Length: 221
Image (cartoon, rainbow, N blue to C red):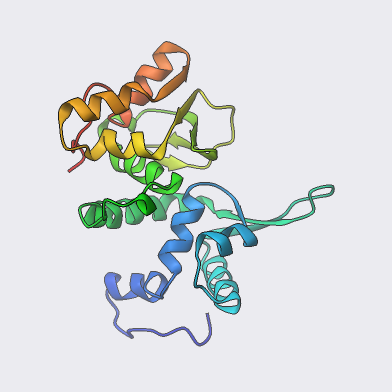
């Protein structure tokens, strides 16, 4: 962390910004919220970031314990980055708050229809805290060919270590529309196109926990 800029103020906001306030940091964490990523995956997802800057940010986040770096054995033999247990505890609420703030600033363009935006809008922004308080389950969400895996445990999101209880298959367009579509009819139609596979009780619990039953609309707001 040597050389990192600091606000030099002993308050929780300033201390938090000392870690999260640097350019690109939150976007790196946003990517890792979707699961383990290779260095090359992060470069591709963050066009414009310099190679040395990405390496610096990853090192800083590893130093403060928010991410883990893992060397996979042969034949894969590659380095992947993922949120640490501490990262799973601290990062999702921050990303959710910023995404909620920025959702109505999202421009209605084709560039917004990314798998990650589908995950943020359809899943992360729909969390119903009271519903996940006593849940323990793993999930997989397939969005336009990209896989997101996570779990719910202890009233928060966590890394997935078990087979998914529910697998959701959807497009980014449908997940975004299900959450912020202009009319109830549009939201319901988009939600009907999302596929939920798993035991019916587990599916029902997940849909309730992430407000993906009926007409989700802006229920998270």
